[in-house]
Amino acid sequence: MTPSITFKLCRSVAFLVLAVGACGDNLGAPTDGGDPDSGASDGPMPGQVPMLTSTAPFDGAQDVPLNARLSASFDLEMTALTDVTFTLRQGSTAIAGSVVNAPGGKSATFDPTVNLTASTEYTATITTGAMSTEGIALASNHVWRFTTGTTLDTTAPQVNSTHPGAGASGVAINSSVTATFSKPIDPQTITSTSFTLMQGSSAIAGSVSTAGTIARFTPTLPLTPSTSYTATLTTAVTDLQGNPLASSFTWMFTTGTSAALGPAPVLLGAAGNYVVLSKTAISTVPPSMITGDIAVSPAAATYITGFDLTADASTTFATATQVIGRVYAASYTAPTPALLTTAISNMEGAYTDAASRPNPGFLELGTGNIGGRTLAPGLYKWTSTLRIPENVTLTGDANDVWILQTTGDLTMAVGKRVILAGGAQAKNVFWQVAGKVTFAGTSHFEGILLCKTEVTLQTGATMNGRILAQTLIALQKAVVTRPQ
Image 1: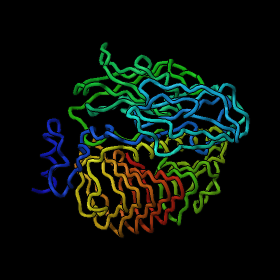
Image 2 (image 1 turned 60 degrees about the vertical axis):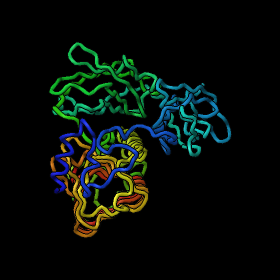
Image 3 (image 1 turned 180 degrees about the vertical axis):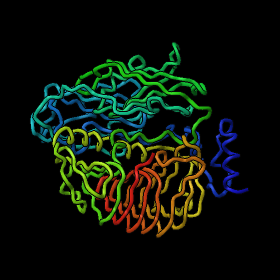
Image 4 (image 1 turned 135 degrees about the horizontal axis):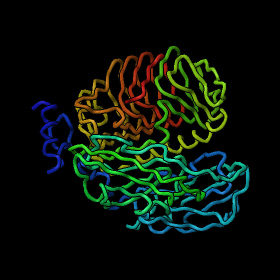
């Protein structure tokens, strides 16, 4: 049986047995941890150690408003955090405040008793006293730091993007509905009355949750095929400073006829506005060519090298002959720094989300060598370097999702390719890499790179996707194109 025939046979019975991973040696054998194609693999495993998925402000944030409240989100339901397990300090001085836990137990906020001091560094901590409802503690204390600005935040939050998008059609019937905001949202204000989904005049049953800038509505049952739905966020939704949406936000979409295979997609939020985004530096050996906007933050524009930047008259961005789009940096004038702060926060949240997805359907497939394989939609995990010494093919439909996790590096050999087949889309392929990424000369890559460290595209390498990295991005006569 050829790989393509195997895949089609598996999809035809996916609703009954959810068995793509069990079909065919070329797809690899799933572990016992969960079904790679069903979304069921997103559920917690017994005895799972909880992880933080996002914090607000994020680690290293600058110009944090003086009336800021802190938020922490987790991948599991937690027992109630307190002012002992969720603390804030300025130097050695404890800051008084109250801790409020959101319904559902996956997030908590710390509300300082008084406004913070201007231009001051603070340290927040979630201790190992924080436990899941199973009684399992965090693996270690989670510590992050931020520095305040000089003003209060009185600006209303905005909805930057939604999934499905407004007017979208052919939406998978097992989709959740999400909204990404311009700033972190108070999880207490995302409720079944402030975030709703309707089919005509009938309310759809479901659960709501929030993490940082992202709110999610998860329907209890699959949506009806070929049907129009309306999602609404009301003005009861506020940011962490208590500023409400200026007006209710409503959008519509229409379902298709089938469910998507694979896990739920990773939401990029404002990070998805950029094709290349780094915290520290972006370099090029000309002539590289980038289609889409690029940015660095909190680094300044001087850390974008080799591009021969030309500042726009607005001083909010620059242009470059190697970029079909705009170039942004934290050193440009408002509103650019604030927008990039949100984008970096969303990038870090997306990385943590992708890294913390539990129950991989495929574990250590090929001991890290996936060259020559055809990969079905699903969640994959490796604890070693992930290698592509030969072409690799990802086969699936337009709504199917892949998340590929590795705690090591990702390397691709000279002239080799990642190939998408059957309608698979680069925007639905997420490569979460804890180590370094290196694509050798004339290789071609597809997907969204979420990298903890640095990314290098060597001479003539091409990519259809996004590079979202937390250190250096080095392009050597490379081509990076924004995915459709």
